[in-house]
Image (cartoon, rainbow over all chains, first blue to last red):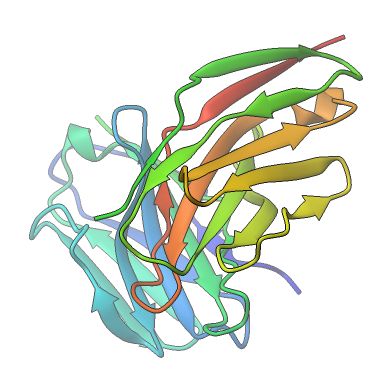
Length: 114
Length: 115
């Protein structure tokens, strides 16, 4: 199994630009999570989906952030417009609900907004 | 809301020795899961060990074991025979069993292994 795939691995952009992060979960998994890691706030959940439906988006910082899951094998996290305080590592994780609840993480996307 | 606290920002251990990382949590739920994740410099999050709250027996995975004290809401990780490859950030995490699937993480402990 290829594991959770994220792209890009690194993204450098300028303030005001649109940024799109992509995630492909492990085949067969039906829950998908987006986490953000910063020095100040640590690891925190932004949003998660179950069977492609958003279940909890209470961690999405503001309207500049949006996430979609159009099908079981793909999700995007979009930031528009980006700001320097959005600089962080963004992780995608997936799990098979009701199967021991382990979440498998992707390698993360390091985002730098100048 | 649940919270997870790791009171040791940094720890160090000599190679082949044993080290214990601390974690406490706060919850009003009676059934839940607790996890330890390892994050090496590659930043990949790797599951080390998992504990189900309703199980009294402490989980063990090779050199890694936990001391789960449910009444005290404590969940420490013991690493025996430490190896250089154990050097990493270690995160304690909480997950509800019946409610939200999200993981709530502590701030992490940076473990250094000295040769």
